[in-house]
Length: 164
Image (cartoon, rainbow, N blue to C red; front, side, top):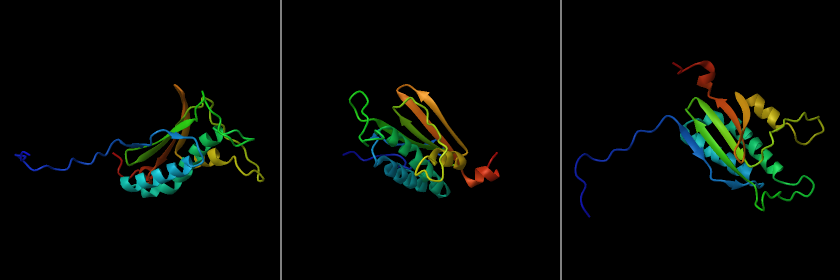
C-alpha cells in the first residue's frame, strides 16, 4: 500500500440544496404506507426538520395509501396486476430546508379524486386533509403513470425568517 501524501483528507461540506431521498420502487402493498412514514420520519430528523414530521407523516401515509387502494380490487381486496405485474410506486422527499416536497409516483394515469365523506364514512377524507395541511397539493401525468406532490413549509418560511 502506498501512503497518501499532501494535505489530510477533509470531510466535504454538507450540501444545503437540494436535499433528496427517494426510495427504490416498492410494491403497492399494505406495508408501503408504513415504509413511507418511517422513511420520512428518519430522513426529516437527519435533515434537521423535525417540525415537519407529524404533518409529513400524515400526508405521506395518505398519498401512498391511495396508491395501495387503487392497486387492489375493492371487492376482493386482491392486487390488480398491470401487464401481469404487481403495481409499484416510488416515494421521494426533496427539500431546501425551507420547503419539503413529498412526491409519490405510481403507474395509474387516473387523477387522484378527493371525496366528500359523510360522518358515517370510514374513509374518503385523506386527500381533503392533506390539501388543508400542505401549502400546495397537486398531481401531474407522467410517462407510465402520474406523480402526486405535496409541499410543506417550515415555520421560518411561514413567518419569513431566514428569507432574503
